[in-house]
Image 1 (cartoon, one colour):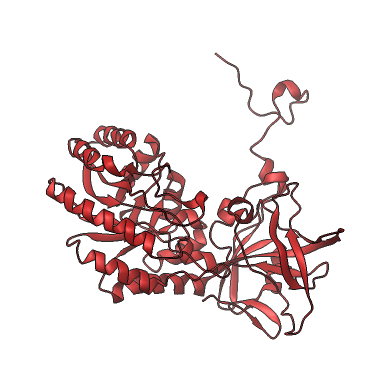
Image 2 (cartoon, one colour):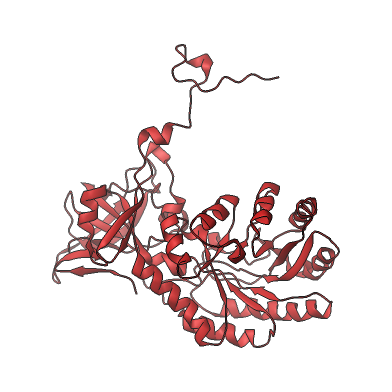
Amino acid sequence: MDHFDYRDGRLFAEDVPLETIAADVGTPFYCYSTATLERHYKVFSGAFHDNGVEAMVCYSIKANGNLGVVATLAKLGAGADVVSGGELKRAMMAGIPAERIVFSGVGKTREEMALALEAGIHQFNVESEAELLALDEVARSRNTAAPITLRVNPDVDAKTHAKISTGLKENKFGIPWDWAREIYRKAAALSGIRIVGVDVHIGSQLTELSPFEAAFERVTELVQQLREDGHFIERLDLGGGLGIPYSAEMPPSPAEYARMIARMANRMVGCQIILEPGRLIVGNAGILVSRVVYLKESEHRSFVILDAAMNDLIRPALYDAVHKIVPLNEPAADATLKTYDVVGPVCETTDTFARDRELPVLVQGDYVAIRSAGAYGAVLSSTYNARPLVPEVLVKGDRYDTIRRRQSFEEMIELESIPSWLDETGALSGPKRRAG
């Protein structure tokens, strides 16, 4: 369920007509619904409470890191899963306390480790022996011990898109399953390391429970073995990955997911359960609003050319993702439909949002909304083709606020400079640098 619906023929975000926002900030723009964010978080976290599992819910910042979005979830008690020093800073700026933050990712630098240790985060999810040794060194240099889980790779097929699968042995993530007990043994001998648990995450946009069950079953066996080996295992980080409906998918509900984890948690006495949902919370809480720039006919295709492009929403180009596209003016029940390719203005064939999509007949100047764009939308945007970043707007009831304003060309270009030897006037050159 989300809070984008038609009223009196117009598409609203909660109690605000989207055309009102479009007139104010221009198009394209992202719009998020506070009520949807809050509902999704409460339904997810409440499902575990109802099943007797007091889980720590750490929202995955990489899904949508806007400070307004993260602050909304922080007010509800969310923790955070971060994968960079920048995301760690974002989470804390938005009001998430460090002790509710877990740090994942395969390439943590020593500087990021130091930042996280100084902040006092809940745990590091360590993904390799090399990272483990680096973290030990950084922690010892600060006379402390880093709380860690090892992310184990269970070699389970998540049955999702290949580009978002993380739990197979050929993926870059986690400790190989057969090496796990040996790496834990080595970790226990490091004075800068404090083992606290086990971590697993097999992928994103999973639409059935069986891959989760297979992975979690392997992890429960590992926890028992590690405890027999003498390790103090008090946390079980089960990652995220539960899918959402983009079009025709019917993923399991949070309640079904929670019941499955509750059965497993009953066997893991003394383990804090940590969960890292991202897409599930924000995916359907956001849309991308765009305007029809041109309609173009060719011998075999009809094109709708939008002012939004793949640099604004890359998911269809990168993941072959399917997003519903709807007009802001509600079509009549018997409206004439036409088959379109919906594309953007970027000079790439992959700048395509939909192919052979049946839509009500559109005209130049119409507004459309690309739905389910709250996750991996604005956060993956770029300035490709010298297109400035678009605004993000957060709605709450009948109010809205711009939580990221439209970037100007000058802001986009201000970090660049022409080298002094190409700029005779010196007006455009940056600081002069010489070797030696």
